[in-house]
Image 1 (spheres, one colour):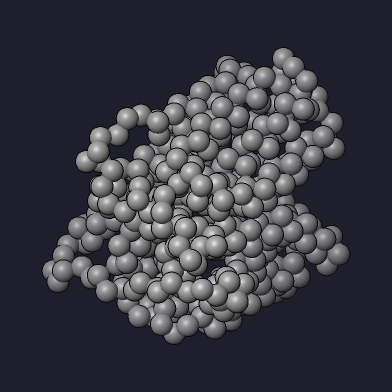
Image 2 (image 1 turned 30 degrees about the vertical axis):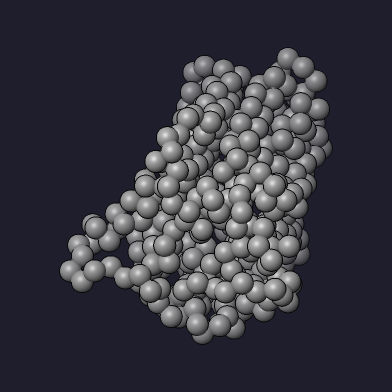
Length: 429
């Protein structure tokens, strides 16, 4: 399903505006739910460190394991129906917690099940929405559209925790989860208002009698065949591995070794949010002027090199160096993420969009907890600074692999031409 060029501004494109509203509502719902679930476990069920961290792990584990299978589902079902069903289930699953608490029957198995099911639905929705965007917006406008959607999602990521904290403080965890459930219900209504044409299945179908393994492998084959995309995904996995280790040690390192006051630590996190917003603003212009492939290569190097600023803070002025890290890393990874998603949507055939997105999401997700757990374990034996240096080396080497020579025959497909020209069509202004 190819969307013809459209000269209307994106802000007047009703289906796209609906997707923006959905991204904000869904992001707020997820942030409130994550905070309220963890606080409920700690305050009501007296959770220890392991039990609390298990809730967070269960929200990510399904995405790492099940994303390729979710991609197959997205490619085979009616897309709008799937989006509405998944968000409606989110509302019911999250809403079951305050109901159980009101009845006095809240238990650990219930919380763990909610975390796992909610995580599964969240990452299925992520794949489905990546697949929906090319059916709503013409190819020449995907870069701009992904930038705006990232901005809408970031609004929820920044405001959601603050709203969740206020709600918990004023009303308690139960009412806060009711609000989170309501946010998912709003998301479902917004998605229901999307064009019915989204329920039209993609033209490309798997041949009759295709084995389940071959159906699943079809998305992986696209990623492996398109070498720029393949390299970007692998480099992203390495960057996530290194940054996952750094993120796991960041608070401990800055508090105990750098003796950073809590207000300065908070400012470094706020700086990252500001850098993310800046990345959203410049991503479209950066990608159009340099091409998506070149933009991601530059951002890979910047993100990798930025990691060295964290261990360097132990030898220099800590606060300015950490601010510099958050600015450079936040800006680079935001442009990287937008460019990767756009390139993926431009390359993947219509009937394989979900599977390509599913494999990419699985690879990028699984490396974060691996890096965090590995970094934490090694830091106990080697110390924080050596592990932070090693994580920066891994991230930089991963970004540098994008600059390795690539034979002309490996640059086939749509990736390189589209990055330099198609973004400058009349609708991309």
